[in-house]
Length: 114
Length: 112
Image (tube, rainbow over all chains, first blue to last red; front, side, top):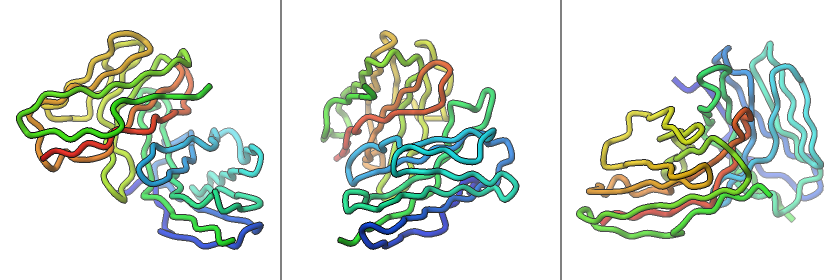
């Protein structure tokens, strides 16, 4: 049972345009969400996170939106740059004893075309 | 500084060998993690140390043995591994009360 789903395995975007990566979750206990970027053969790089008490968090070109009622979050990258080409993982954790455990989605491969 | 370092970068070992993976962070984080990642899959949690004590062991085989000598260091001792244990092994850390986990670059392990 996949609790964190990234339904788009890949996404192609023109340089300078907006990239929107989507993530859905099923576990109502999740209250903290993170996005990571990963290049091949490297560790994931933390990008941005959001707590369930918020519906938006922004850091530079990256904005994460959370819709709790729909159990959906999205990562917006504006403007997209060729260096953003990577696999993006959405992750979630639950409060309490489970707060250390991240549940990852399967990732979306973003290609930014110059 | 959000750097987690891991050594070695690559490791090839036979099934009878004993080797260790090392992880270090100097961010003052009090939680450290070992993950395993296979190609085209998300990372899978193996162990969590919180304040230098093992708090989570995700039913990992005993041929993997974690050790946390101090709050900055985390080791993973390997013995009698199988070829299917070949993977990217990732270390991560987070502050004691924080939930943002920062990953190291990983050790690419090949078991022959």
